[in-house]
Image 1 (tube, helix red, strand yellow):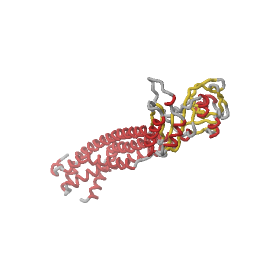
Image 2 (image 1 turned 30 degrees about the horizontal axis):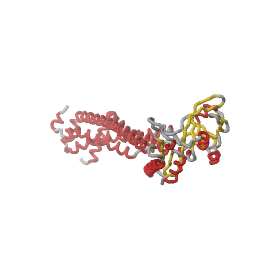
Image 3 (image 1 turned 45 degrees about the vertical axis):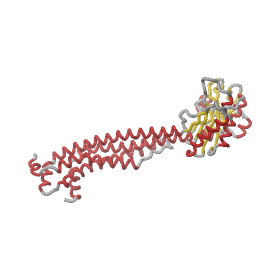
Image 4 (image 1 turned 60 degrees about the vertical axis):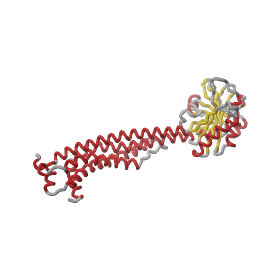
Length: 399
């Protein structure tokens, strides 16, 4: 008997028990669909989280002075605009710099006083922090040089103070100064607590804050590297430059997003492994189900096996027949499961935000098919070998 006839016999046997074959392959369908979906979800979540972090600026380096609680720190320990300019001029690979300083204030508008976070920013802050202007405009060079009494407010603060009215051109008072609102802004993405920007934030030119407070001090210094590959070099050189420009007792913390990116990748990988293990457990259970059903099938078809052996079927032909049946059950279930696993991401794509794409891994499809088929063959071998080992005389006597 050639392989085509063996295949035909196996297919006929499955056709005679369609419902049993479908129910047996149900576990394989669920397991293979789970593998595809798990990898797809893992890739999507990883891509989303990493894109969110990188949107803050994967090439961002920022420095802050380490605050000491045990003793007061001299003013010459503080970061200054001169430090910022030195970083721009002296550190290779830096394409943009910016500085910021915060003051807690209260804004008065419409006779109502609200606490706000007042931030004085230098030129380059919008480019580095990737602020989106929703209404109006950002500061221009004249605003910075002339210490113009203008400000930008967050959308949340705008809604609280002005409601549905357009705030551009309106006045608000903070402390002794009255500012004209020239724009409404927001951050491009959530910054996981790493940004100066809060819900009730107002940004003004740093030159005005310096004039208002009389102190040329920055709380944070931001530097944008030319690319992610030079971030470690920029981080190291910024730290060295700041130490060289200040007394030996001053300490500065220079940070990047590399650690957060690495942590996000590691967490995503760990979750992917855990979920894939769960999917493999589902396939393992389905494999045990295949073995159980195949053992029952061998028992039911003992007489048929005896007849085939009596007319000349060899040991390997009986073995191949039942292995092919197990392969068709697991392989067919794998194909259906993979199609379901691919259809679900395609179906939910229109419901996702426009900038989020669901990547489907071709490797996950191959792995799901290979593992599912291997599971069927592995657990189908014992029943197949048992069927091939039956003695014709004993099989023919079986009732």
